[in-house]
Amino acid sequence: MAPGAEVAGSPQEVLDRFPDCWVIGGGAVYQAMTAHADHVVRTEVDARFEGDAFAPVLGPQWRQIERRPDQGWSLSRDGLRFAVTEFHRIRGQ
Image (cartoon, rainbow, N blue to C red):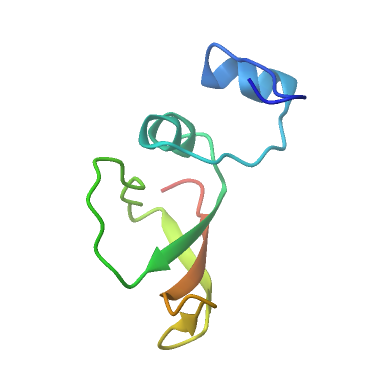
């Protein structure tokens, strides 16, 4: 375990201890915590990779509030094209 890391046994335990936290996956962590989130920051990569973990699909209660860049892609130092999109949950839907 990394120095300073803490172990939690459930999403509720995390939220009880850290009500305003950021979550970084794997897929099961994303799936478990998305139900509790109000804000999602997603990095989209314009490439295909082998793997079995994906960010959860966001339903109609989520609204995109920003994408950087607005159109097209940013370019990493290594030439990988990417964009960062932020979503907020609309409660009551």
